[in-house]
Image 1: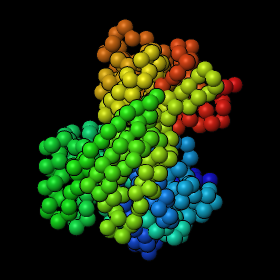
Image 2: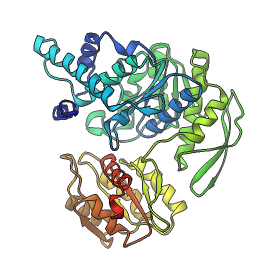
Image 3: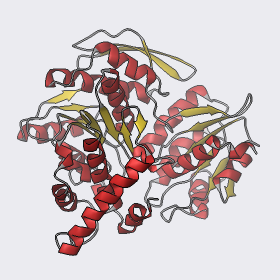
Length: 430
């Protein structure tokens, strides 16, 4: 049904605002029909976006959420209210936007068709306008400055973290990556920042100062008391605005404690901007938010569990490793796959000490790293480590359960999405 849209993936990644600007102009600027919160960062931005969106919903607002990539179904990228948009509505809006894009190419206004991400971003804006959305949380796709989402004029922006990822597009230093992420900062718009390295914080603050934007470090003047039960955190948080009662976080992992604080400070900062989220709505958001594929523990039956995590860079792998080292000291088997442009060695360096046998598997994706290359990278780090090569994720999961009753799946959104879909269809139980 979405063949025209997926065909745009052939255009690859193209950073820049020219195409998305002209496309949205032709659509009558749908991105201006609602208020926005813009969230950038290397890791954590999706979790924070989901928490803030949940807060808006709990506050009774007609809220939307735009994220990428999706795990199983493209509709996951476009959340209106609590659910992905209906397939027919998404299809009709997609056809309308792509017809507009084709007309611009035919007239010479555009030199080429939009990329897949440029198109999905325009589709999100048009969907949200048609749905009469009040406020939308928009997650940056890649970088910030030249990301297609950066044509919005948000009420607030956030930079959740800065780490090494997408170096080919963003640069090889934290400072260069920070420059790209900080490109979402707009004149006079407040910026909520997560825990950034001190030199990166200085760099971001300098950029913000030049455009008269106030930086709000999420952890400044905040006290946190936490305890964990079976991998789930219980937080008592005091901010300059409020003392929160103990909140059991819906999302697993210590790193979600940091994301929760960033989300809280974003929602608190929105209140004086006219987007009011009561404190009880904030607490409920953190307790109930759903964000699949992020340390998602699924019980297949009474004896078997699968832990799904979309960790796809060294920082994400480190967060997963911390969780495994604390809650799964049995060192579970790891099913692993990754894209060619990822720092696989950096990820494996974090994960190998906390997992058992490595089952590398293939993906139906032209960007996927081949199994032999991953095997070689494992051998370089640990020559004695057992590596099993399996052609597809279904067989990989069956093989993995021969080595343990809990299996970890990580390294790629595409891998996690594939395995999760199979679990939903119960294919692995056959």
